[in-house]
Image (cartoon, rainbow, N blue to C red):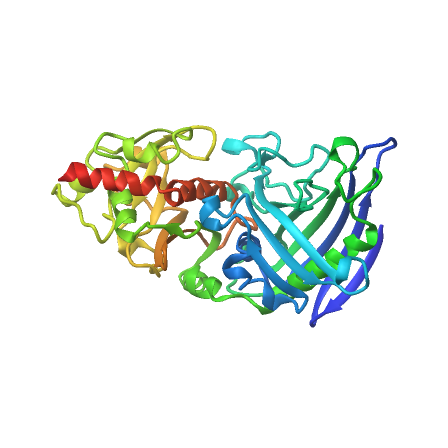
Length: 457
C-alpha cells in the first residue's frame, strides 16, 4: 500500500491509495481505492452536496476549484422526479496531456444505494439503479450498520457514480463510502470541529467483446492509472475546499444552529426536486387529507407497493381534532395522528405519524405551513389515552418552500443530544424522499388534488 500526504488550501488530507489485487485470469475488474480525511464538514453536509452537485448549473460545484468549467443535469431534477438516478455532465481543465485538449469530460449517472437491505434487515446492498447495481465484488468500507441509531448504527453512507463515454458504455464508476469520525455529538458538543473519513473506489470493469467501446481498439481498461490519479486530484481539490464553502442551505435552511441551541442535532436532510405546478395549498391538503375521504386512498397512491393501509386513529383525524369538517388550507392540523402499515421497502416501527402542536417543536420552521411531524410507535399509540403527547426521541420536520416554477419539499430529521453513537445521513429516508419526489414531480399529486376539488364542488 502506498501512503501519500498532501496539504492543499491549508487543510490537511490524509490520502491513502490502495490497489485491490486483481485475481488471476482475464476479464476481471480492477479497483483503485483512495482514502481521505476531511476536517470541517460532517457526513450530512457531504451527502447533501453530492445529491445537489449540479443544481443551478453548478452553483455548489464551480467555486470549489478553478478547474471546474461547467456542469449541468442532462436528465433534470424535474424530469428525473428526484435527485437519485439523475445524469449530469461536467467539464474540467486538467493540464498534462492526459485527456484530449486537456479537457476532462465526465458524463455521470449518479445513484444512491442502501447497504442495510430493505426494512433494515440483513442482505445485499439495495440499489436504486436496477440496471447497474453495485458490483458483486465490491464491499463498501463503511456499510451502514444493521442497528438503528439508538443502538449505535447509521454511521455509514454510500454513493455510486457511473461514468459513461457518451455512447452508452460504462467504462468505470466511483463508489463512495464515508462516515463521521470527528465531532460525533456523543458528548452533546455544539458546532465544529466536524470530520469525515471518506473512501473513494475507482471501479474499472474489463472492457471486451460486446462491452468494448468504439474508442478502444483492444480489450483492456478504459482509464490508465495516470488518468485515474488526475481525476482523483480534481475531486480531492473540491472535497478539500468544501469545508470553506458551505452554502446557505446548511445554516439557513437546515436549522442546525437553532436545533443545537435547543439540544438537538440534524441527522438527515433530503430534498425533492422543484416539483412543477405544486403549491403549498396542495401540500397542506395532502397532509390534512392524506388518508383520503376513504381510508388510505389519498396516501397509498403515493407508493402503493410500500403502503398497505393508512388511516386516521379514532378521535385523531383533523376533523375530530378541530371539531369541524372544514379543514384549514393554510396550515397542517396539529394533533392529528395516523397509523401506517408499510411493507418491506421502507422502515416503519408501527403506529404512524403525529402532527405535534407547534409549541412542542424544538426549533421553529423556516417555511410557512407544515408543522413538525414525528413517527409514533405502536406502544405510544396504545398509551395515547393516558399520554396524548409522548415525547419523541427524534423529529421529522416536513418543510415546503414555493420557488419559481413549483415547490421544494424538504425532510429534516433532528435527534436529541447527546447521541449514543455517531450518526450520519440516514439512508432509507433518502429513498423515501425519492418516491415522494416522484409522487409530486410527475404531476400525480396535482391530478389527485384537482380531482378532489371537482368532487368538493
